[in-house]
Length: 421
Image (cartoon, rainbow, N blue to C red):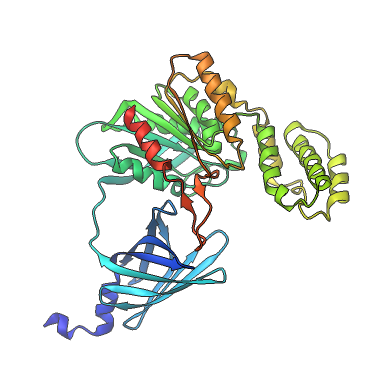
């Protein structure tokens, strides 16, 4: 009787909460998505987030989830570059409609699903490196036995714990604890990543390892470090700063001097716009001069002169203004030599790259790092994986819907390597 006499609008609002499984479809390309909706009993407002294995994301929040009347649902997803708006109808255990994203349109359809309880627990923890307090999340597999664990290092820029959350959930689901944390000055962590030296960030990771050792269900003999991009490049320094790290994963880790890597990255960005051999040569000259000023302290007159001469070229980009953090960042990293730190590593190493990485020279970095470790520690286990056709983030060219595909062996090869060791 209560259900019969409940006003339809109230019943629908209650019905929007829960777990929904379904798909987004655009240009004939379909992507599986899980949607989680909750309603705050006090504010009576909804929160919504989504997971997608294809996008390698977990818990990405929507803005402004709304239910109007009995059935009209609106969800807004704000990204770094685009905003997608989803509008649809709630009909009992189904939710469907259309979305618009950056001038393109698609459809979505969800069905209510039983909310499965994760096989791991998650809680917030904090730890300190000197005067900096770092906040993160520990994903801990359920059970009684002591488990291995991985600390995730960040890539460049203002990365929060969300950046490694997908991989962390994969590990926790397979019995390996994961600690993900907000970089200095990001999220709930204090400090400022813009002013952090490589040693600062490596010591932050060492503090994370030390914090894990305080956890009764973490096996202190089986704590490793995973770093991607900048994190992978700094991973050997983090190992050297930590006591008893058991293994290290260098994901898209640079094995060349930092100025060489910067030139490689910039040229890959500008070459597609070069229209002639002379254009390409000028782009190389300009990029080399920019990096020499940024990383080696060369004075700016020639760079500014080149900028005036080349400013109308299709590939041209202006030097960052003098107050831009690029210059300070470059000076901080100019002296970092990754191979000097890889020479100190004495634990199993996994080096994993995308074959078409345009940020880091994959094969050369892998060869240099592997040779350095093997030369200084011949008995150390070094494994190299280069994923065909994959980019810096191990993604393949996007499908017709614009959504990227992940290299199929990326996550499985990481899980296999960890399980074997």
